[in-house]
Image (cartoon, rainbow, N blue to C red):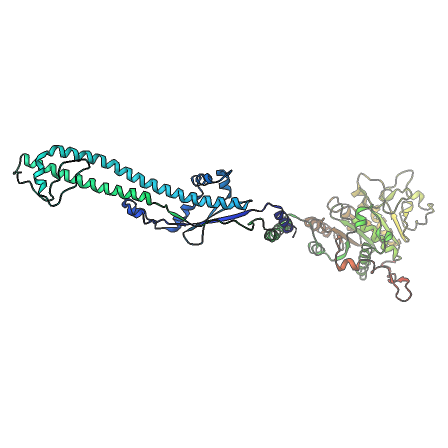
Length: 570
């Protein structure tokens, strides 16, 4: 539609072009030409081939020069740009058309070309006849000389025989010698001698006179043809002044633009399908990963434009918060048969939103009265520490796994006064968040060997302690394809949530991530489709009507809709 619209607009802004056409009837077998026996073998037998040849002649430079004699300010180059010649149907009629922004000039050019072509053909035919007449003239002169020479040799004695002849041979122009009677034999000639020589001269003179007369008669016919020659074409319809432009046609161009745009769109889609390796829909995320879909998190414009934040706390009725609630519910259903306490949240590559998913999921469990611990297990580039605002200095997970001398976590484990020492093994490294029931264990300083720390016995002991003292432990880990940290923790967790971003995650990356997790023997809870664009009815339902509270039609107040679910693990 865009291409069609632009095509129509651009077409309407173009200068109108007018076209005028003249029609010329071709007469390849002109009866006047048949008077010349030399042209008897040149009669046209293939009309289509003849018409094609005449089209080339109309477009030739010679016809253009003949046409511009009656035009002002038009050059041969202008004629070549504005001329078009086509056969009118299957007839022997040529349609000679000319286009120009000025209607009158288009008409004049078409008529001048038609007349110029006719004149060109006439001149070519006349030139052929004139050349034939000249060739005959060149043959008559020697014959005339021969006849005069024979007359001189025969002498006066031949006059007697010539007087009794009933059929005389024509004399050469200017000659006074009488012609010999046709079929008569000189009685004075004997069996040989001079009489025989005179008879031979007379016979030769008679033959030359007959040939001369034949050529002379043909020459006269050619001269008559030259005066009567009309050429091989006839103008049957002159070009008229055009009243409407042949171009542009905005409506037609707009319709063609729509079809061109359609083909262009199909081509782009095909190329994109072949070259773009990113998953482009929620269904494709589920199909490529082969995992159950836990939730689809809509793309939040405010989160994308502003600084990262915990949406379920700042905007609990937003579409994203409602989607996180559905993610929490999906995990609760999965814990019916097999308890889930330690949950690893990871992704294939950076930038897919795994940290925001982990933080919001932890806050959502805490709002449901779960004792929740959020662990920033990304020891290389953590982004969770800033989501909950400023907090007191903490050695973080790095300090808990590998305590630093003169300030280890154990020295302050029992005297921090923060009320969070109930998280076993974490001590003062755990910090309080604005969300009730939610504790945060920051990542701490970046160690030189993050993978070795996360795979150590100390980390295994911490995971076991946290599983006993907390209801839910959410571990935010690095991307799977970047480092091995997430795979190390996934093997020790109760379940793994894999985050994939629509229109960002590549198919091969998603497949490789699932393959890595399967090799570790981890329990794959499912995949979360993040950054999903929601339109139509989905956007309406996400607009605050489904949340922790709904309007109370009885008294207009808001009341709780969902009761806290049973805890996953005691």
